[in-house]
Amino acid sequence: MKFPELLIIYRGLAPDDVLAATASLHAAGVTAFETTMDSPGALTSIAGLSRRFGGAALVGAGSVRTLDHVKAAADAGASFLLSPHLDEAVVAATRTAGLVSIPGAFTPTEVVRAHAAGADLVKIFPIAPVGAAYVQQLRQPLPDVPLLATGGVTAELGRQCLLAGCATVGVGAGLIDAGAVRDRDWDRLADGARRYLAVLRGEDE
Image: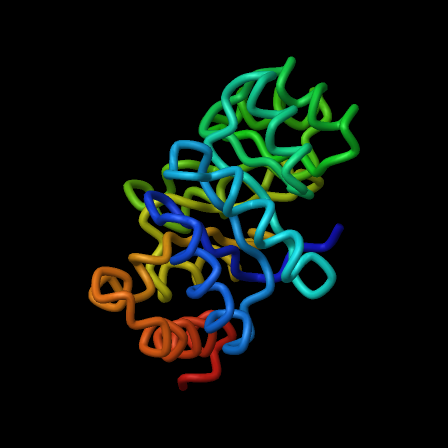
């Protein structure tokens, strides 16, 4: 599974809002969506996204911390699972279920352990406190480990992370446009996503 350069993360949004936001964001060019397991009705959101967008977008679950989470998300139709941490048992169960595994890590030791455990990508979290230079440093001894950066990723930071060697970046919908999420203004959110993508791709210059 090849990830696009941008993964949208939904945390705290109810299923109806997730579906409405995704319809607008998908029209704006976003093709990967994660709903965190601690969101209200998370499994309903994942199942709804899978039914409606599964053939046209990647649909996954985030904040996956337990084996029960793995099974529930897989049953709901998720195709990839992200975690804030590394748990080898969660990685193994994810792979056994035929899903893409993206555990969280931060230090070089954690990144290597995650890769050795079978992670398809390794999530560097949180990236904002250290910036893209940290990714560049990690990539020098670990060029074979695909990385996904999350945690406070502004558009400019996202671009710098991609230039530093990340395969993709994950961003909360609220970072695209917090006001649009608060007001349930999904068209405005889509406009924000277009601007975000333009910065990621260097098309705003």
